[in-house]
Each structure stands twice: as structure tokens, then as C-alpha cells.
Length: 510
Image 1 (cartoon, rainbow, N blue to C red):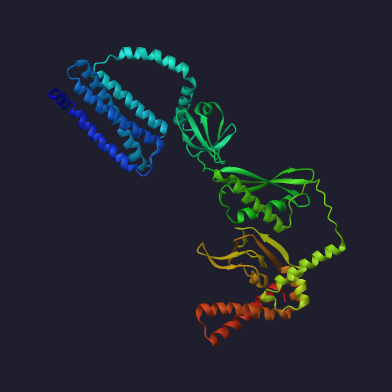
Image 2 (spheres, helix red, strand yellow):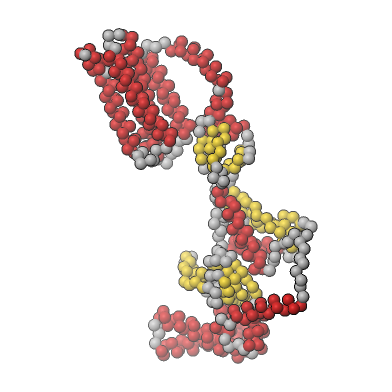
């Protein structure tokens, strides 16, 4: 027993190191508690605990075998080997799990494994040489074993070398969207044997690294010195009756008028005439996608913007040439549809307070001049400062009225069905005082200056009551902001009425 204690005393340096390393392991375990340790690092911690137990067991064997020199020596060498490996794994765990994540640097899993493996080899050679082990015979024997293993594990070695090559040449990174063969998805992990790809179908595909090295791999959205964005194509067909210049201008105004989520602002989206078919002209919108994960939803948003822009302009999408219509069309049916449309227009017009001075005949004429104008969510209906001589009557949906001050837009009002905006631009020609955005799919009736010109020129006296209504609205807003008394309000009302009447007469040449 005394000999055992003396031998154990000789191993005190090893026990002290064991307890010091145990402290480091405790720090790692506490740092990565509550389920935050990844599976591969959890396995590393288990290996570290196992080596600790093996080291402690070897120390005890070396102490117990003090009477046998061979057992004591071999157990002592094993204890030092286990100790060295413990130090390597413990330092690697602290370095890669605690220190490195708090820096801006990143090291791939393969390079981490290489660093650990190299350190273990160095420690092993150092301990064995200090123990007087002849490494020459080991190297000679290992060469034969290596040859046998290499022949039997050609595929595995090929995958391992391929994974190492992918890391060293820096061609594919975690987070890249790639295509290899029929696989299309995002790289989530590059390991020794395989690369893991997550697809949009919620699948994870493991591709052997040797295959990635041999095959052609497309990395989406990657160009040297440029931001990560992918060009997408959205096709649509339009009838020959509409000029290509009109179609392209209409689509580009819709695409550039307001931003679309995940569509890059630079380079700008463009529209091109792709082909002239038997009965239709084929167009394509090309835009740059900033997030490859949402390709189909963004394509859908672009198609929606195209659809509403063309419909608003009166340019229908082309139907197949072989479409056959067998709806019975007669005079009675056409008259009924026209009457229903006319009633809808009169109903919308009756809600415009500024047109109250019009008689029934004049209201009928104005209703005939209304133009159906639909917008989709996010589109700019009118922009602040623009010279647009028409007004809009909201029939369905909602819009946001925003005013820009020093380049910053602020919402000042929202409007819904039955409300009107743009009256001042129609009646006086003044630039738009605010920008109006569609906050949902919106249906509007638009009244242009020319449609109203004939009515007001035939009866110029209606300009006076219309100017009075507009002036009262302006003064009402001023009273709320400035707290005007009755006399001041009367003077302001008269001045506003005269100013508006002068502008209306000048604008319509009365």
C-alpha cells in the first residue's frame, strides 16, 4: 500500500493537470449549457470525458504496477498520451466553442478537424519519442496498412479529399444557393464526406464531396465584386393590336413606380419584346432577385404588378389563338351591360362634393368620360409634385396619402370607397400636393381634364360654386390648425374663393 501511494505521488503532476483540465471542461459545459451545444461538439465533450477517465485509470495502473517495470512504463506512456490528447481536445473545445465565436473570424468544420488531428499527431510523436519508442518500425508497418486501407476506402478518401478541396479553394460557402445535377438548394454544411443541401421543398440532400468536385456546380447570384442577386425572367403575352412601345412603357412605370420586396433597385428591372408569335407578342420582364429563397413568391408579385398595370391601361393579356367564344351576344344584352356600367359611374360621381353644382345632364356627360383605373397593393397612384390633371374616385380598396418633407414621407390620411383625391389638379392644374399609394388592390374611376372641359366651357358659371366648395374645405382645415375667429375665417374664405376661381378660369380658358 505504501508503494502504491509513493507511485501515485510520482504521478502527482498528471493528477494536477487532470484537475486543471477538469476546470476547463467545466467552463465549456457551463458555457454551452441549456441545449446550445451542437451535436458534433457534444460528441467532442463526451470524448474529452472518456479520455479523462482513461488517463486517470492509466495513472492508477502505473501506480499499482510499480513492482513490474514493464507495466509501470507502458501505463505511464499511455497516461501521458491520454493527457496530451485531453489537452488538445480541451483547448480545441475552449478555442472553437468559446473564444472563436466571439470574433469576426470563421473557421470551417473541416479545418477545425485538421487542426485538432495535426495537434494530436504532434503530441503522440512527442510523447512516444520521449518514452524511447522506435518510430521507424511503426512508420514501415503503417505504410503497408495505409496501402491496404487506401485501396478498400477509395470512395471515402475521395469524398474526404473533395471536402478538403472545397474548403481550400473557397469556391462554395455555407449559405450559397447552388445547383448540381438535379439538386437545387442552399448549402447548410460542408463535412468531410458530404455537403448538405436544403431544398425549397423542406428536404435535406447529402451530396458526396467527390461528386461536387467532379461535376459542374452553379452558384446562384454570385459575381466577383457584385452583390448577391439573381436575374429572373417573367414572361407574358399581349395581342398584336397594342404597340410594343406602349406595353413596355406601361410595365416599366409599374415596376419602377414603387419598390417590390426582394427586387433589387440596381440594376433596374427591364421589359423586352422576346418574340412575335402566330397571334401574340411575347414579352419578358427581367429583374434581379436579392433572396434566392423566395423566387416563386417574388415572381408572383411581379406578375401581379404587370397584370394590374396592363389592365389599367386597357391592354389585355393575350388569349390562346384557338380560344372559342360561344356566348350569345345581342343588342339587348349589350344595352343591359352598358346601363349597369353607367349606373355604377353615376353612383361614384354622386359622392364627389365638388360636382354638386352640376345638373343631371352635365353629370351624365361627366360619367361618360370616367375611365376605369385599377391598382395593385404597393403601387404609386400619384406622386407629390407631379402635374397630373385628373382626379380619382375610390370605388374599392384603400389608399395611403403621404407628404414628403425634407425627403421623408409621412402618412397624413387614409382613404377608402367613396372618397376622392386630386380635385385641385383637375380643376386648377396645380401639382400634386401629396403622394398616394395603394395599400390594397384598389379600383378607381379617373376623370381627366379633357372629359370635364366641355362641361365647364358650356356653362362657365358652375366654376363659382365649385370654387366656393373647394375654398370652404381649405379654410376649414386652416381654422382647425390656426384657430381662426369668425372675421378672419370670412376674409380667408373670400380670398381663397377668388384665388381658386381665377385659377380655374385660367386653366380651362373661361
